[in-house]
Image (cartoon, rainbow, N blue to C red; front, side, top):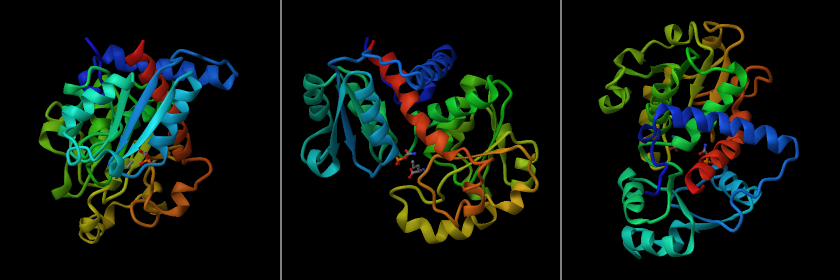
Length: 298
Ligand code: CP
Ligand code: NVA
């Protein structure tokens, strides 16, 4: 049966931890100049219904460096669900390509694509989840700690697609995740069912013992109309110098990017040369996705 990568939840802990170690090894080998042709002749179709820098370029480069190639299809070109039905796009792309990556709005669209494709489908972000980002984040924390079990990760801000995938990641790896949001913006109960204890509304308490502090935009792609309202609701949840005074000195700062500087995070914090690891996270998209691609295609 073909495998997909729609949610971290769909995979057992052994697989997720294996993929993190595999990404670590592939990164070390790439740094040492080792060339892999693991995906020679394989093609990845990439559908983008939303903008992207990291996801698009890292998948493209990952395929190239593994000996394959990627084809970018923008929303306008494909008209997924408008010009043509999701099942028909899935069936057609499966005839040309060995895997499909999709970034879209509704999570059901990604599920529908996976259901009707005969090749692996990878979730490159939906409104509900961003699993490839969480895998890159896992690699980034693993490089620093050498073991994810018991690592204290505090996520502050909007409980969104990135948060949901971090919740799933924590369940598989033993990361001790705390999610800190305003009262009305807590993660969906379905996401936290297995671990209600991870929730708080108090940023100072949430960062007190953190090894890593993570934030993301308050208004995600597609929520532009909610931005003014959310900017007000989240104003006490900014990751700034004041808040960092309450955290351990050697805490690391994470953000999946793109950042709305001056809103969820200040320049001072995101540009901190010692504590900020946001561009390591960005680079690790490449290595984590290589591991995912090889796992799905080999
Ligand atoms: N973090 C992330 O997914 O970045 P892009 O939106 O630029 O792909
Ligand atoms: N939560 C953000 C993540 C961007 C990578 C969004 O969905 O826009």
